[in-house]
Amino acid sequence: MVAGIVNEIRGNASVNYRIAKFEAGQLVYNRNTDEDGFISCVVPDGGVISYEVWIPKEFNTWKAGYWISRWQERTLTPSGNKRLGPPNKT
Image 1 (cartoon, rainbow, N blue to C red):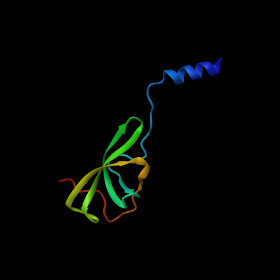
Image 2: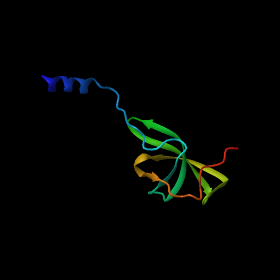
Image 3: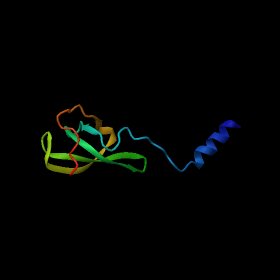
Image 4: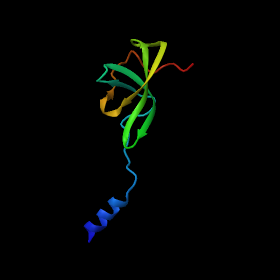
């Protein structure tokens, strides 16, 4: 009886909730591209979490501006790059 109720609840559940590992404002490292970047926003898409990330145009500095890319969560770890830090708000 209980198993039937659980299966019915599962069948009726139309929403999957995932919690993002990272949040906007964090510096992350992409192990596939060997780059550090700054998360500007979290983008949930059908149960897959990705991030809009700013990548500096020049190594370890935001002075030249940044590129915008979409990175998937599974490729990311927290960045250990203490030199880069967050971009300045201007």
